[in-house]
Image (cartoon, rainbow, N blue to C red; front, top):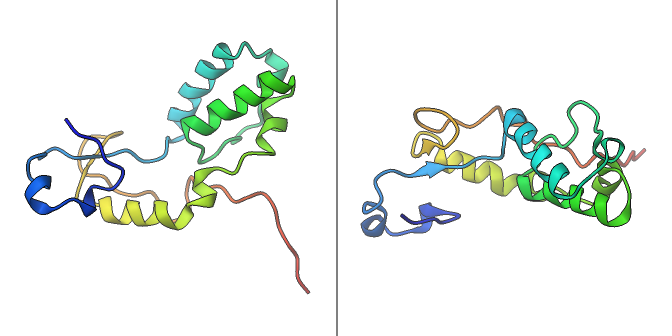
Length: 136
């Protein structure tokens, strides 16, 4: 068993020793919905602190969900307030994630579904920063 963030840079000779290679994409909606209660409980957040609007945390990783819950507990705020200070990897590393998805498409097994990994639509599940600059 081996893990790597980018197996495409491993030599073919070493790569063939690991015939079953899986691609772990960002958690989908179901995955995130399973992660939230784990950290809400771990950080003992109140229902008010844990309340989040529909679609909140779109494209987030488990680490970002953890960070929002941890900060909400630490500062006595809501996860929505804490999230104002978190830039998700899906935003800060958008091109990198898109590249990894392209590289994995049809080459690796999906860790989430049976069969080969197929990337989601180009912009699905990747949030925007939530900020906008209007230039005239």
